[in-house]
Length: 57
Image (tube, rainbow, N blue to C red; front, side, top):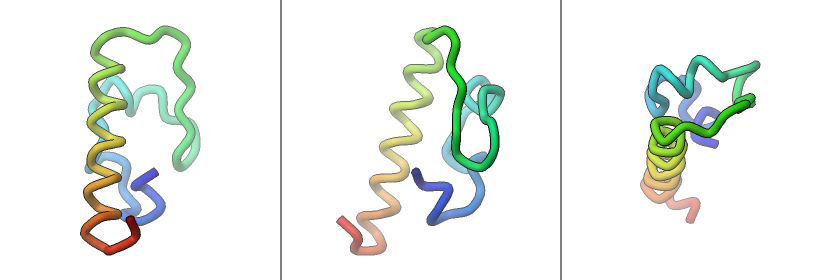
């Protein structure tokens, strides 16, 4: 989860995904709408890019 490296989940998460945020990095998804799937995929991709930039992967 990029929030552990970056510290701000708003930098990689869309508003619908942020609405499901509970705590620092836990998301409680009750219904998996297509928009949420897109935002989860974008957050994962952003996290991977961040980790690559830092040489962690």
